[in-house]
Amino acid sequence: MDRASGASQAPSRPEDHVVVLFGATGDLARRKLLPGLFHLAKAGLLPRRYRIVGSAPAAEALSDEQFRAHAREAVAEFGRSRPEGPAWQEFEAALSFGSADTDATGPLVEAVREAERAIGGAPRRLFHLAVPPVAFASVVALLGATGLAQGARVIVEKPFGTDLASARALNAAVHAVFDESRVFRIDHFLGKEAVDNILALRFANGLFEPLWNREHISHVQIDVPEKIDIQGRARFFEGTGTFRDMVVTHLFQLLGFVAMEPPVALEAQSLRDEQVKVFRSMRPLDPAQAVRGQYTGYRGEPGVDPASDTETFVALRVDIDNWRWAGVPFHLRSGKALAEGRHVVTLGLREPVLAMFPLDAREAADGRANELVIDFDDPGSITARFLAKEPGPTMQLAEAELTFNYHTSFTTENALEAYEHLILLAMLGDQSLFTRSDGIERLWEVSAPLLDAPPPVVPYAPGSWGPETIDSVAAPYRWHLPDRGLPCAR
Ligand code: BG6
Image (cartoon, rainbow, N blue to C red; front, side, top):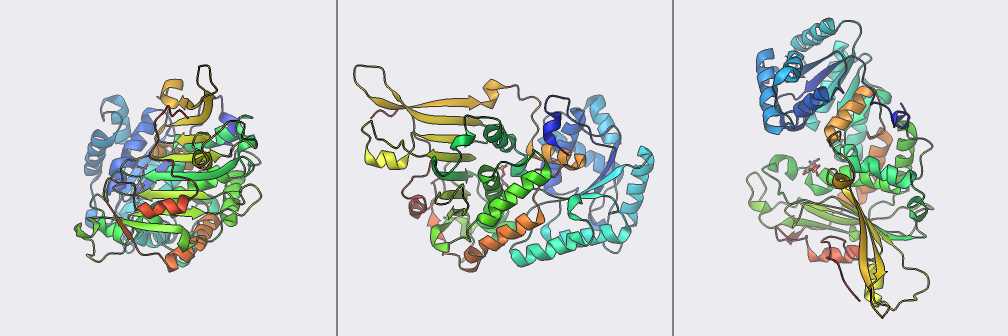
């Protein structure tokens, strides 16, 4: 599957499908998956003939009618368009429900057969495992035992393991039933428009790619602060923490795209080969180059251990030992209850060789005036910051910027949300934006030193930018966020 081939044509439409949603009564299905599937249907991107079978353990079973009502409420609350009119009626008619437990798979098997009969021919099956990680292996085994897995594809939600041993065990359980070409491990950050745009920016422009290496770039930052706290997810968060929840998943995946070598072609194998090469070049994390934080008040949240050592914040340095990036630090930061919610990748450019203009030494080391800032809040923007001469009789320099903004440059009505984009790609059988087993295992491998010897958590005030000690992680540079206003004359 080559995503470049369809560039100027209408988007491809998947072959006929039965989609089975495990965890159909859960939070993810309600907030993202059911509204996302309806949006794809409205946009004409679902197959010509499709059925969606909701599933959950028998204890939470719904009738077909109850599942339709559940979907209607989900779309009304979280969807982009109202669940009404002919488009909704058509979508609703494609929904049914079949419960499944390891020892009672009959209702699901029957619901899938019924959906296949309604479609006719030999539709493809896609199973979406929107279930807690502890249930992954048993659902996969159930799909194998019933024969439902035959020829089917499977979407697996994050987190994929909690360390190298558990990720290996999970990969083995999945591979016992589905070969890797049929496994789609979701990381919703990879479905964001701006991630594809990193590829466009780098590989479609002579303007940027020549700069994209250690000769010209002094440091890179991947910064995803969140304003929200744990929002009552104590049970999940206590056993996970920000490093596993955000860094090993989302931030490392972004790093793979920012740092990769040019792929042979814009297709899954080449892209994933290059991404995994980056992970293989990553130096094992150094706990001395990491700060773990915990916001004040976290230990008082219902369900949190009053002596909890779980981090709600992490900042760390990553080194990539390859020819392109040797010596260029990558600084990563993410945390809950911070001052702002942002998604920002910053590439700091080196100063020119000859200091022709007098610059304050500290500012020069900071390099803020020479940077490329990719903001991937959906749909996002790209800003180049540089120095320009201020009009006037003297050679006075000031910071200036050029900004590309999706909203003002393009119509964004065809944009898909991350989940919509990824579900569509899975139906098309395109694995470009899904993680591969060897990549996941390598990320847990480089994470081991930090997981084995985590530095103690440092408290920080909610609404701040995290513990002050994080400045040492970025030194001699500074964190790009919070942004500094313009202009800033020298
Ligand atoms: C999820 C994490 O995967 O991503 C959450 O479990 C986090 O803790 C969320 O808040 C952030 O996603 P986004 O797209 O809102 O930045």
